[in-house]
Length: 390
Image (cartoon, rainbow, N blue to C red; front, top):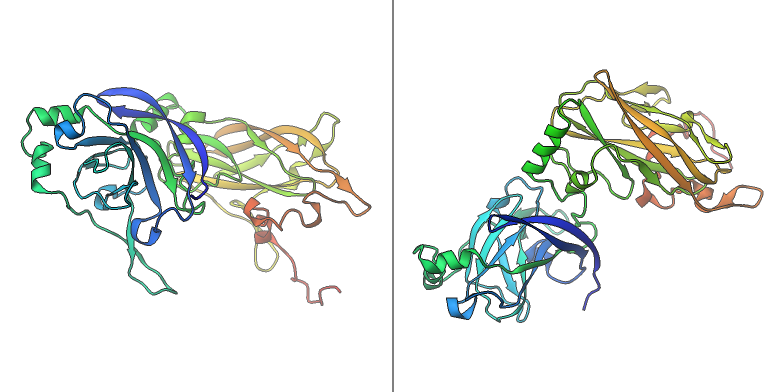
Protein backbone atom coordinates (compact mmCIF):
# COMPACT_ATOMS: atom_id res chain seq x y z
CA UNK A 1 0.00 0.00 0.00
CA UNK A 2 1.29 3.47 -0.90
CA UNK A 3 1.92 6.02 1.79
CA UNK A 4 -0.20 9.17 1.72
CA UNK A 5 0.37 12.50 3.38
CA UNK A 6 -2.86 13.92 4.73
CA UNK A 7 -4.08 17.26 5.95
CA UNK A 8 -7.55 17.87 7.36
CA UNK A 9 -9.69 20.63 5.95
CA UNK A 10 -13.08 21.80 7.25
CA UNK A 11 -15.60 22.30 4.46
CA UNK A 12 -19.22 23.32 4.66
CA UNK A 13 -21.18 21.00 2.41
CA UNK A 14 -24.50 22.01 0.86
CA UNK A 15 -26.63 18.89 0.98
CA UNK A 16 -30.35 18.26 1.13
CA UNK A 17 -31.06 21.99 1.42
CA UNK A 18 -29.18 22.28 4.72
CA UNK A 19 -25.68 23.47 5.54
CA UNK A 20 -23.61 20.97 7.49
CA UNK A 21 -19.97 20.83 8.49
CA UNK A 22 -17.84 17.99 7.20
CA UNK A 23 -14.17 17.42 7.84
CA UNK A 24 -12.46 16.20 4.69
CA UNK A 25 -8.77 15.44 4.30
CA UNK A 26 -6.51 16.21 1.33
CA UNK A 27 -3.65 13.86 0.61
CA UNK A 28 -1.03 12.84 -1.92
CA UNK A 29 -1.03 9.19 -2.96
CA UNK A 30 1.89 8.51 -5.35
CA UNK A 31 1.41 5.51 -7.62
CA UNK A 32 -2.04 4.66 -6.28
CA UNK A 33 -3.61 4.76 -9.76
CA UNK A 34 -2.72 5.22 -13.41
CA UNK A 35 -2.80 8.96 -14.00
CA UNK A 36 -2.44 8.58 -17.79
CA UNK A 37 -5.93 7.11 -18.01
CA UNK A 38 -7.65 8.36 -14.88
CA UNK A 39 -6.16 11.81 -14.35
CA UNK A 40 -4.37 13.38 -11.42
CA UNK A 41 -7.27 13.89 -9.00
CA UNK A 42 -9.76 11.63 -7.32
CA UNK A 43 -12.33 11.60 -4.52
CA UNK A 44 -12.56 8.75 -2.03
CA UNK A 45 -16.16 7.91 -1.13
CA UNK A 46 -17.27 5.57 1.62
CA UNK A 47 -20.58 3.80 1.43
CA UNK A 48 -21.73 2.16 4.64
CA UNK A 49 -25.12 0.99 3.41
CA UNK A 50 -26.83 3.04 6.08
CA UNK A 51 -30.04 4.98 5.68
CA UNK A 52 -33.56 4.03 4.76
CA UNK A 53 -33.71 1.86 1.71
CA UNK A 54 -30.49 2.79 -0.08
CA UNK A 55 -28.73 0.06 -2.00
CA UNK A 56 -30.23 -3.35 -2.65
CA UNK A 57 -33.78 -2.46 -1.69
CA UNK A 58 -33.74 0.37 -4.20
CA UNK A 59 -32.07 -1.40 -7.07
CA UNK A 60 -28.61 -0.29 -6.03
CA UNK A 61 -28.59 3.51 -5.94
CA UNK A 62 -26.17 5.59 -3.88
CA UNK A 63 -25.86 9.36 -4.01
CA UNK A 64 -22.68 11.39 -3.46
CA UNK A 65 -22.60 15.16 -3.23
CA UNK A 66 -18.97 16.22 -3.66
CA UNK A 67 -17.85 19.74 -2.63
CA UNK A 68 -14.69 19.63 -4.73
CA UNK A 69 -14.30 23.41 -5.25
CA UNK A 70 -12.47 23.08 -8.57
CA UNK A 71 -10.61 25.86 -10.33
CA UNK A 72 -11.29 24.64 -13.89
CA UNK A 73 -13.97 26.71 -15.64
CA UNK A 74 -15.47 23.87 -17.73
CA UNK A 75 -15.96 21.22 -15.08
CA UNK A 76 -19.15 19.94 -16.69
CA UNK A 77 -17.32 19.07 -19.92
CA UNK A 78 -15.01 16.50 -18.34
CA UNK A 79 -15.71 12.81 -17.85
CA UNK A 80 -16.59 11.34 -14.47
CA UNK A 81 -15.30 7.83 -13.76
CA UNK A 82 -16.46 5.89 -10.70
CA UNK A 83 -14.29 2.94 -9.68
CA UNK A 84 -14.99 0.09 -7.26
CA UNK A 85 -12.04 -0.15 -4.85
CA UNK A 86 -12.70 -3.82 -4.14
CA UNK A 87 -12.28 -4.96 -7.76
CA UNK A 88 -10.58 -2.01 -9.48
CA UNK A 89 -13.29 -2.13 -12.16
CA UNK A 90 -15.17 0.87 -13.47
CA UNK A 91 -18.72 1.19 -12.19
CA UNK A 92 -20.89 1.26 -15.30
CA UNK A 93 -24.19 2.33 -13.76
CA UNK A 94 -23.52 5.98 -12.99
CA UNK A 95 -25.78 9.00 -13.37
CA UNK A 96 -24.04 12.37 -13.17
CA UNK A 97 -26.95 14.57 -12.13
CA UNK A 98 -24.99 17.83 -12.18
CA UNK A 99 -21.42 19.09 -12.17
CA UNK A 100 -20.28 22.61 -11.38
CA UNK A 101 -16.96 24.00 -10.25
CA UNK A 102 -18.23 23.98 -6.69
CA UNK A 103 -20.21 20.74 -6.34
CA UNK A 104 -20.72 17.44 -8.13
CA UNK A 105 -23.95 15.45 -7.64
CA UNK A 106 -23.58 11.80 -8.65
CA UNK A 107 -25.67 8.64 -8.34
CA UNK A 108 -24.07 5.22 -8.85
CA UNK A 109 -24.58 1.53 -8.24
CA UNK A 110 -22.60 0.15 -5.26
CA UNK A 111 -21.63 -3.05 -7.09
CA UNK A 112 -19.61 -4.44 -4.18
CA UNK A 113 -21.90 -3.17 -1.47
CA UNK A 114 -20.35 -1.37 1.45
CA UNK A 115 -16.86 0.00 1.09
CA UNK A 116 -14.78 2.61 -0.72
CA UNK A 117 -15.46 3.96 -4.20
CA UNK A 118 -13.27 6.34 -6.17
CA UNK A 119 -14.45 9.20 -8.35
CA UNK A 120 -11.96 10.44 -10.96
CA UNK A 121 -13.11 13.81 -12.23
CA UNK A 122 -10.36 15.04 -14.57
CA UNK A 123 -9.30 11.99 -16.64
CA UNK A 124 -7.28 12.70 -19.76
CA UNK A 125 -5.51 11.03 -22.64
CA UNK A 126 -2.21 11.91 -24.25
CA UNK A 127 -2.52 12.95 -27.89
CA UNK A 128 1.06 14.09 -28.24
CA UNK A 129 4.42 12.37 -28.40
CA UNK A 130 6.26 10.94 -25.44
CA UNK A 131 8.77 13.80 -25.58
CA UNK A 132 6.07 16.42 -26.19
CA UNK A 133 2.87 15.25 -24.48
CA UNK A 134 -0.46 16.95 -25.05
CA UNK A 135 -3.07 16.06 -22.49
CA UNK A 136 -6.71 16.21 -23.60
CA UNK A 137 -9.53 15.73 -21.12
CA UNK A 138 -12.01 12.97 -21.89
CA UNK A 139 -15.51 14.22 -22.65
CA UNK A 140 -18.50 12.99 -20.62
CA UNK A 141 -19.93 9.63 -21.58
CA UNK A 142 -22.86 7.41 -20.58
CA UNK A 143 -22.29 3.76 -19.62
CA UNK A 144 -25.37 3.14 -17.46
CA UNK A 145 -28.01 0.57 -18.43
CA UNK A 146 -31.38 2.00 -19.34
CA UNK A 147 -33.10 -0.22 -16.81
CA UNK A 148 -30.86 0.96 -13.99
CA UNK A 149 -31.46 4.57 -14.94
CA UNK A 150 -35.19 3.93 -14.92
CA UNK A 151 -34.96 2.25 -11.52
CA UNK A 152 -32.94 5.21 -10.28
CA UNK A 153 -35.77 7.46 -11.44
CA UNK A 154 -33.62 9.27 -13.98
CA UNK A 155 -36.74 9.42 -16.14
CA UNK A 156 -39.69 8.29 -14.03
CA UNK A 157 -39.60 10.89 -11.24
CA UNK A 158 -41.45 8.53 -8.90
CA UNK A 159 -41.07 7.73 -5.21
CA UNK A 160 -37.71 6.06 -5.85
CA UNK A 161 -36.33 9.34 -7.17
CA UNK A 162 -37.45 11.28 -4.16
CA UNK A 163 -35.92 8.71 -1.86
CA UNK A 164 -32.63 8.57 -3.77
CA UNK A 165 -32.28 12.35 -3.58
CA UNK A 166 -31.92 12.37 0.19
CA UNK A 167 -29.29 9.65 0.61
CA UNK A 168 -25.56 9.99 0.13
CA UNK A 169 -22.17 8.37 0.37
CA UNK A 170 -19.59 10.00 2.64
CA UNK A 171 -16.89 12.11 1.01
CA UNK A 172 -13.89 10.79 2.92
CA UNK A 173 -10.89 12.29 1.15
CA UNK A 174 -9.54 14.21 -1.84
CA UNK A 175 -6.38 12.72 -3.31
CA UNK A 176 -3.77 13.89 -5.83
CA UNK A 177 -1.41 11.58 -7.69
CA UNK A 178 1.67 13.50 -6.48
CA UNK A 179 2.68 16.70 -4.67
CA UNK A 180 3.21 18.55 -7.96
CA UNK A 181 -0.47 18.10 -8.84
CA UNK A 182 -1.78 18.74 -5.34
CA UNK A 183 -4.53 21.37 -5.24
CA UNK A 184 -4.44 21.88 -1.48
CA UNK A 185 -4.74 24.54 -0.22
CA UNK A 186 -4.13 27.21 -2.85
CA UNK A 187 -6.27 25.73 -5.65
CA UNK A 188 -9.30 24.88 -3.53
CA UNK A 189 -11.57 27.71 -4.62
CA UNK A 190 -13.98 29.79 -2.60
CA UNK A 191 -17.60 29.55 -3.69
CA UNK A 192 -19.35 32.43 -5.43
CA UNK A 193 -21.49 32.96 -2.33
CA UNK A 194 -18.44 33.14 -0.05
CA UNK A 195 -16.76 35.68 -2.34
CA UNK A 196 -19.95 37.77 -2.45
CA UNK A 197 -20.10 37.83 1.36
CA UNK A 198 -16.44 38.91 1.51
CA UNK A 199 -17.01 41.71 -0.99
CA UNK A 200 -20.05 42.95 0.90
CA UNK A 201 -18.15 42.96 4.18
CA UNK A 202 -15.31 45.05 2.71
CA UNK A 203 -17.33 47.06 0.18
CA UNK A 204 -15.64 50.32 1.22
CA UNK A 205 -12.14 48.95 0.58
CA UNK A 206 -10.30 49.25 -2.72
CA UNK A 207 -8.36 46.04 -2.18
CA UNK A 208 -7.62 43.30 0.33
CA UNK A 209 -4.23 41.82 1.19
CA UNK A 210 -3.68 38.17 2.06
CA UNK A 211 -0.11 37.43 3.22
CA UNK A 212 1.28 33.99 2.43
CA UNK A 213 4.48 32.22 3.34
CA UNK A 214 6.60 30.87 0.46
CA UNK A 215 5.33 27.31 0.93
CA UNK A 216 1.83 28.28 -0.23
CA UNK A 217 2.44 29.86 -3.63
CA UNK A 218 -0.46 31.88 -5.01
CA UNK A 219 -1.57 30.10 -8.20
CA UNK A 220 -4.92 31.58 -9.18
CA UNK A 221 -5.62 34.96 -10.74
CA UNK A 222 -9.42 34.86 -11.10
CA UNK A 223 -10.36 32.87 -7.99
CA UNK A 224 -9.81 33.17 -4.27
CA UNK A 225 -8.60 30.15 -2.32
CA UNK A 226 -11.04 28.99 0.34
CA UNK A 227 -8.09 29.35 2.71
CA UNK A 228 -8.40 33.14 2.34
CA UNK A 229 -12.09 33.06 3.19
CA UNK A 230 -11.32 31.02 6.28
CA UNK A 231 -8.37 33.14 7.45
CA UNK A 232 -9.63 36.54 6.34
CA UNK A 233 -7.58 39.43 4.91
CA UNK A 234 -4.89 41.39 6.74
CA UNK A 235 -3.63 38.53 8.89
CA UNK A 236 -0.03 38.83 10.10
CA UNK A 237 2.75 37.28 8.05
CA UNK A 238 4.68 34.61 9.95
CA UNK A 239 7.97 33.21 8.67
CA UNK A 240 10.92 31.15 9.87
CA UNK A 241 13.99 32.05 7.80
CA UNK A 242 17.50 30.95 8.63
CA UNK A 243 20.44 33.26 9.29
CA UNK A 244 21.84 34.74 6.11
CA UNK A 245 18.93 33.41 4.08
CA UNK A 246 17.09 35.11 1.23
CA UNK A 247 13.62 34.69 2.70
CA UNK A 248 10.72 34.98 0.24
CA UNK A 249 7.06 35.58 0.98
CA UNK A 250 3.96 36.79 -0.86
CA UNK A 251 1.39 39.53 -0.50
CA UNK A 252 -1.77 38.41 -2.27
CA UNK A 253 -3.64 41.52 -3.44
CA UNK A 254 -7.32 41.04 -4.29
CA UNK A 255 -8.68 44.05 -6.17
CA UNK A 256 -12.24 45.00 -5.25
CA UNK A 257 -11.96 47.71 -7.89
CA UNK A 258 -9.38 48.40 -10.59
CA UNK A 259 -5.98 49.32 -9.13
CA UNK A 260 -3.27 51.37 -10.81
CA UNK A 261 0.40 51.42 -9.88
CA UNK A 262 0.41 49.09 -6.88
CA UNK A 263 3.45 49.67 -4.68
CA UNK A 264 5.02 47.93 -1.67
CA UNK A 265 6.64 49.87 1.18
CA UNK A 266 8.80 48.03 3.68
CA UNK A 267 9.36 48.98 7.30
CA UNK A 268 12.38 47.84 9.29
CA UNK A 269 12.15 44.79 11.51
CA UNK A 270 13.47 44.71 15.09
CA UNK A 271 14.03 41.99 17.67
CA UNK A 272 13.89 42.23 21.47
CA UNK A 273 17.60 43.14 21.63
CA UNK A 274 17.11 46.06 19.27
CA UNK A 275 18.84 44.39 16.31
CA UNK A 276 17.42 45.51 12.99
CA UNK A 277 16.75 44.17 9.54
CA UNK A 278 16.64 47.41 7.60
CA UNK A 279 14.09 48.27 4.91
CA UNK A 280 16.80 48.42 2.25
CA UNK A 281 17.41 44.71 2.87
CA UNK A 282 13.99 43.98 1.37
CA UNK A 283 12.63 44.12 -2.16
CA UNK A 284 9.48 43.31 -4.13
CA UNK A 285 10.57 41.66 -7.34
CA UNK A 286 7.27 42.53 -9.06
CA UNK A 287 7.92 46.26 -8.83
CA UNK A 288 11.70 46.70 -8.48
CA UNK A 289 14.25 45.09 -10.73
CA UNK A 290 17.62 45.20 -12.44
CA UNK A 291 17.82 45.24 -16.23
CA UNK A 292 20.17 43.17 -18.39
CA UNK A 293 22.74 45.98 -18.30
CA UNK A 294 22.70 46.24 -14.51
CA UNK A 295 20.54 49.34 -14.23
CA UNK A 296 17.74 49.46 -11.65
CA UNK A 297 14.20 50.03 -12.88
CA UNK A 298 10.67 50.18 -11.45
CA UNK A 299 7.83 48.20 -12.98
CA UNK A 300 4.23 49.41 -12.89
CA UNK A 301 1.76 46.87 -11.57
CA UNK A 302 -1.95 47.35 -12.35
CA UNK A 303 -4.63 44.92 -11.16
CA UNK A 304 -8.06 44.64 -12.75
CA UNK A 305 -11.15 44.44 -10.55
CA UNK A 306 -11.88 40.97 -9.13
CA UNK A 307 -8.34 39.82 -9.98
CA UNK A 308 -5.58 38.49 -7.72
CA UNK A 309 -1.99 39.70 -7.94
CA UNK A 310 0.80 37.93 -6.08
CA UNK A 311 3.54 40.31 -4.96
CA UNK A 312 6.70 38.34 -4.22
CA UNK A 313 8.96 39.95 -1.63
CA UNK A 314 12.43 38.94 -0.46
CA UNK A 315 14.19 39.71 2.84
CA UNK A 316 17.98 39.47 2.95
CA UNK A 317 18.42 38.12 6.46
CA UNK A 318 21.78 39.22 7.97
CA UNK A 319 24.34 36.68 9.11
CA UNK A 320 24.26 38.08 12.64
CA UNK A 321 20.46 37.94 12.94
CA UNK A 322 18.71 35.85 15.56
CA UNK A 323 15.45 35.74 17.45
CA UNK A 324 12.01 37.10 16.62
CA UNK A 325 11.80 40.22 14.46
CA UNK A 326 8.62 42.24 14.14
CA UNK A 327 7.58 45.13 11.94
CA UNK A 328 5.26 45.94 9.04
CA UNK A 329 5.00 45.95 5.27
CA UNK A 330 2.46 48.12 3.44
CA UNK A 331 0.67 47.83 0.12
CA UNK A 332 -0.36 51.12 -1.52
CA UNK A 333 -2.73 51.69 -4.45
CA UNK A 334 -5.35 54.25 -5.44
CA UNK A 335 -4.63 56.47 -2.48
CA UNK A 336 -5.28 53.59 -0.06
CA UNK A 337 -2.84 51.76 2.17
CA UNK A 338 -3.05 48.39 3.88
CA UNK A 339 -0.51 47.63 6.61
CA UNK A 340 0.43 44.00 7.24
CA UNK A 341 2.16 42.98 10.49
CA UNK A 342 5.31 40.90 9.96
CA UNK A 343 6.84 38.44 12.43
CA UNK A 344 9.99 36.55 11.44
CA UNK A 345 11.53 33.97 13.72
CA UNK A 346 15.13 33.73 12.51
CA UNK A 347 16.42 30.25 13.28
CA UNK A 348 19.83 28.59 13.12
CA UNK A 349 23.15 29.84 14.45
CA UNK A 350 26.30 31.23 12.94
CA UNK A 351 29.40 29.04 13.28
CA UNK A 352 33.03 29.83 12.55
CA UNK A 353 34.80 32.96 11.37
CA UNK A 354 33.14 33.00 7.95
CA UNK A 355 29.53 33.19 9.08
CA UNK A 356 28.71 29.69 8.00
CA UNK A 357 25.61 28.39 9.72
CA UNK A 358 22.19 27.03 8.89
CA UNK A 359 21.41 28.01 5.28
CA UNK A 360 24.00 30.81 5.47
CA UNK A 361 26.72 29.50 3.18
CA UNK A 362 24.70 30.08 -0.01
CA UNK A 363 21.82 32.24 1.31
CA UNK A 364 19.62 29.18 1.00
CA UNK A 365 19.79 28.97 -2.79
CA UNK A 366 20.71 25.30 -2.47
CA UNK A 367 17.05 24.76 -1.56
CA UNK A 368 15.24 26.32 -4.54
CA UNK A 369 11.86 25.05 -3.36
CA UNK A 370 12.03 27.80 -0.75
CA UNK A 371 12.09 30.39 -3.56
CA UNK A 372 15.49 31.61 -2.36
CA UNK A 373 16.69 32.13 -5.94
CA UNK A 374 14.24 34.93 -6.70
CA UNK A 375 16.97 37.52 -6.23
CA UNK A 376 18.83 35.97 -9.14
CA UNK A 377 16.35 37.91 -11.30
CA UNK A 378 18.17 41.05 -10.14
CA UNK A 379 21.68 39.64 -10.32
CA UNK A 380 24.53 41.83 -11.53
CA UNK A 381 26.92 38.88 -11.66
CA UNK A 382 29.35 38.84 -14.62
CA UNK A 383 28.36 42.31 -15.87
CA UNK A 384 31.95 43.51 -15.51
CA UNK A 385 34.32 42.91 -18.41
CA UNK A 386 36.66 40.89 -16.22
CA UNK A 387 37.44 37.27 -15.55
CA UNK A 388 35.49 35.82 -12.61
CA UNK A 389 37.77 34.80 -9.73
CA UNK A 390 39.62 32.54 -9.26
